[in-house]
Amino acid sequence: MVIRIAAPAAAMLAMFWCAPAKADPCEGALPTYGASFSGTVRYIGDGDMLCVGAKGRRDQWIEVRLGDFYAPELHERGGEDAKRRLIRLAMGRTVICRAGRRSYDRIVAYCTLDGQPLGELLRANGGREGGRGWRR
Image 1 (cartoon, rainbow, N blue to C red):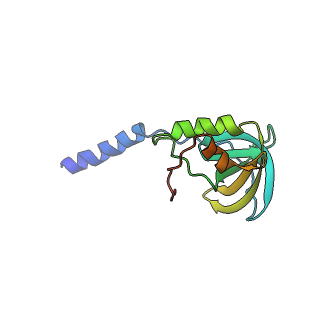
Image 2 (cartoon, rainbow, N blue to C red; image 1 turned 135 degrees about the vertical axis):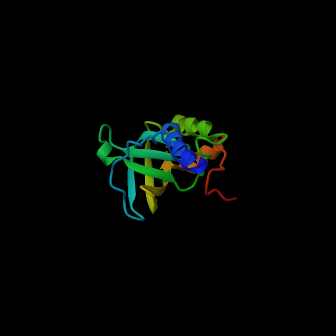
Image 3 (cartoon, rainbow, N blue to C red; image 1 turned 45 degrees about the vertical axis):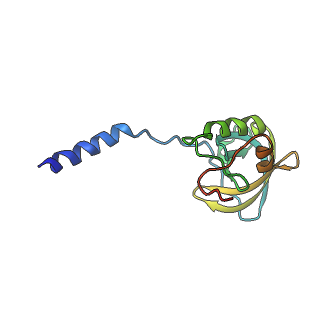
């Protein structure tokens, strides 16, 4: 009897407790493996995710997961700092990227800013790695 009441109550609580995930604005087609692409950084989702593309053309913004830096997740210690660091370094600036593999609905890419690898710039500016998938 308790289980028959508890299960529906838990399901109702979960519906109200969980917030919908925020969708990122990157809607562009992903480049093929090895392709080079460039553009202005238009959006930053966290410490290692950004959108690259032309102003006002979200349908052409490419969602990039940096291939050379693993930031902590936003909910982890240091995650918000990592996002702010990437915003300071890259927002509104032009990056040149080379596409790697796909990861979910984004491309893992290696990007440079003023000729310097973005991952190296993040580390040189105090960025600490430690997100999911990070290995020493």
